[in-house]
Figure 1 (cartoon, chains in turn orange, red):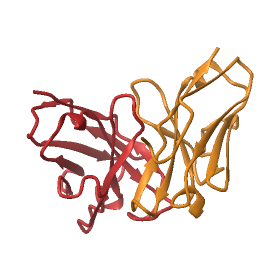
Figure 2 (cartoon, helix red, strand yellow; figure 1 turned 90 degrees about the vertical axis):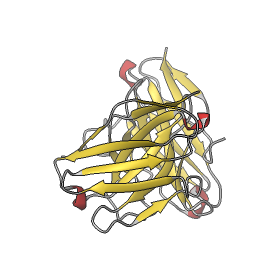
Figure 3 (spheres, each protein chain N blue to C red; figure 1 turned 120 degrees about the vertical axis):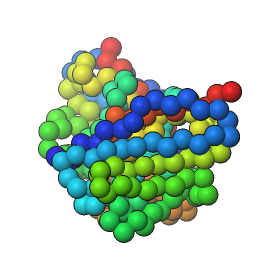
Figure 4 (spheres, helix red, strand yellow; figure 1 turned 180 degrees about the vertical axis):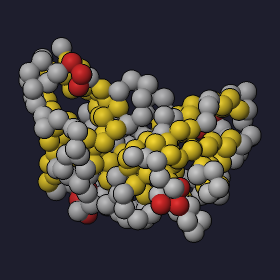
Length: 111
Length: 123
């Protein structure tokens, strides 16, 4: 059971927009800690796509965007492409555990 | 640009220990903060701990306190993570990674990552 809760899967047709939610609590996201997002392709290491809630590192497509409100955060992928098929994870700090914690992951499928 | 290259897959019996290495290139090891994250099959990543190779200071997740030790060999720019008293649920891929911020900066995210070292614990 992960500290941050994500839906197991989301899917969309090419060109559509999908949103992945990440729900935490008052000891992590709700405490105001930054949320970061990672993309993990099969057999590869995670790669960060959003940092500090809504910032995109250089080289990441502007089709990726992040937001945060209250005890939740979201990652949106617009103009869905086949190359976006991957697992996505949210991450934040948790003051109760004194640890960085991750979500259980969401598999994005392009129909 | 920082690159992290980890040691190869390991198979261990319950009760044994495993030591995974992570060789840094592109930067000196002492310029980085090295963290270790593991990922069990079908699960999300799990942070294990981090250390500062410059002064040897380490911070560990409560879950692994007493079982994990993070060290370094600055002469070869290589970081190590040793996990003892292995159990079957320690079967996972173990990653080394770095952070932009200070070792214990709560704003930290992890980038880049090593390629991962699969560790299988089975009798």
